[in-house]
Image 1 (tube, rainbow, N blue to C red):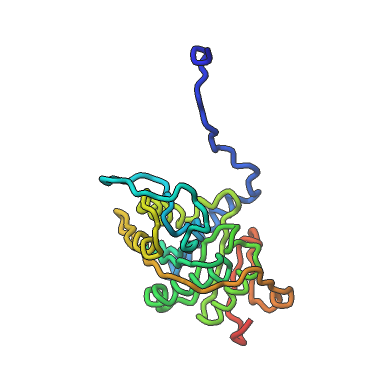
Image 2: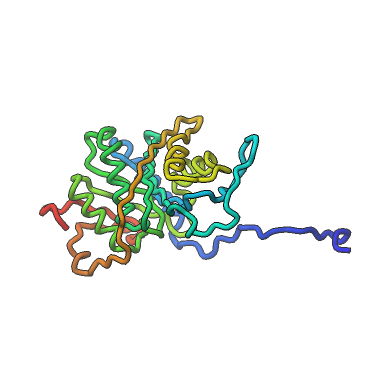
Length: 266
């Protein structure tokens, strides 16, 4: 009775974005201009984010692949049946089209995020940018590297002190995180590479990440991080006052630079 009247089964369509940030467009173009300025002076620019955590074990992985026989996996995704839960944190260098993913097996905290950036600098960044004195970071507005967590800024101060780099961070406003390059240039390619393959072990996950390539020459490195990062670390107002941080006029909560402390400690 319904079909002749033009009715059919339909699913919800994601199209509404809700209330946008009042300076969303200005922030987006500010990031692009600032990034171009850093590149002209041969300073590193990186895009960072944490990928969705994955249960490691015989669990269904979305997607399909060509094979003679389908893999048999657990009917239910009970975390208790998993070997562990792994969270890849990515650091993507657009200029080199090269990424490093730090695969953590514990909490995805701000300490884990900055430790991943440190890994990238020590393994790839320092050699590629020997004359670097400034680092530009694109990040989402939320999560472990969001603009609100105090711990994120404190750990960046430690990184600045240890490396001697001034660190400029620009966060994409809420609803614009898909503009973050690592999302569509790295994470989407990794998900496509392991689609339909159960991530039975950490070695399997690392192998799929390292084997991710594109026609434009993307290279991805992966390292395992088994450090147990503590949750719930509080950073006091007194500690925040010791940070050598300068905020920009446009969206000061989203744009700021952290410079090394002269004393070498925060």
